[in-house]
Length: 338
Image 1 (cartoon, one colour):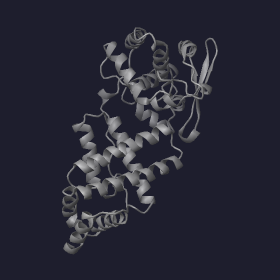
Image 2 (cartoon, rainbow, N blue to C red):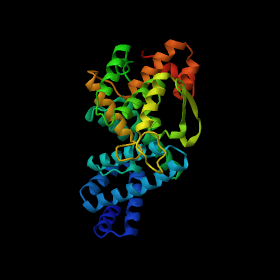
Image 3 (cartoon, rainbow, N blue to C red):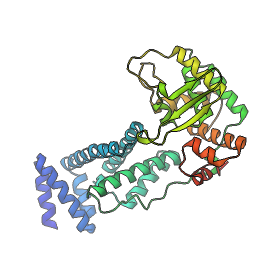
Image 4 (tube, rainbow, N blue to C red):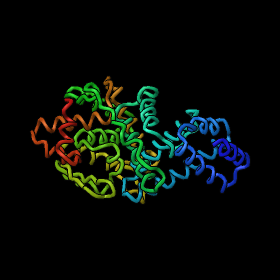
C-alpha cells in the first residue's frame, strides 16, 4: 500500500487531465479496499493543494452529471437548483473537514456529522436539514445507479423530527397583524407582496410551487377563482379553489404587474424576472418581524392553512389533496403537532 501512496503522490505533483482521472480512481480503490488507510489518504490529499484541486474538480464533474440526472427525473427547476446548492455545500464541508474526503467517499457517519453540523453549527431548522439529507440521498442514488457507489450511505440516516414547538399555526389576530404589516410596506411592492402572503395563507402551497406559478395557472372572477398547481415534471396537478380575499388580492396585483414580454410567471421581481424562493422567504421574514411575530416562516403559513381548513371541513382526505400529499397518513402526521 505504501507503494500505491507514493505513486499517487508522485502523480499529484504534475497533474494532467488523464492523471487526475487516474488519481481519483486510485483514491477510490485505496479507500474501498484498504479502509485502514483512509486517514492516510485523506491526510495526503488535504495537505497537498493539487490533491485538493483534483478532488474539487472531480466533485464538480459529478455534480454536472447529477444535474442531468435530476432533469431526466422530471424534477422542477427549483428542486434541481436546491439539490445542487445543497450538494455543493456538502462538497465544501468535505474539503474543509481536513480529511480530504470527496462526495463519492461519503460514509454514513459523514452524513450524520454533516446533518449535525447543519443543525447545531449553523442552526438550521429540522425541515431545512431534512431537505439537505434528501439531496444527499438523491445524489447517492444517482451515484449508485452509475456504479460509482456500492450503497447509499444516507439511507440509514433518519430525518430529524420537528419538535411540537416548531409547528405553530397563526391565530386570527396574528393573521390580521401580518396582513396589516404587508399593507404598510413599500408602496411599489405592496400589491405583489400582499397577493403572495394571501396566496400562501389561503391555499397552503409551498414557496417553490408559488415561484413556479404562471399566469395561465389562475382563473379569476369577481369573488371566486381557482389555482392549478403543477407537480414535479408537470405531473400530479391539483386544483385549489380561491376565496374572495385572495381573488381580490390577485386582481389588484395583476393591474400593477410590470409588463415583461416572454415572462409567463405570475410573480415577478423588480427587474421583471420570475421571483425567487429566497425573495419570497425573505419578504415573509420581513413582514412577520414587522408584525411582531417570532418563529414564523413561509412554512408556518402552509401549516396555518392545513389546520384551519381541517377545522372547517373535517375531511382529512380533502386536506391531503389540497396540500399535495400522496397519502392521508402523511397529512395526519403533518397536522398531529397542532
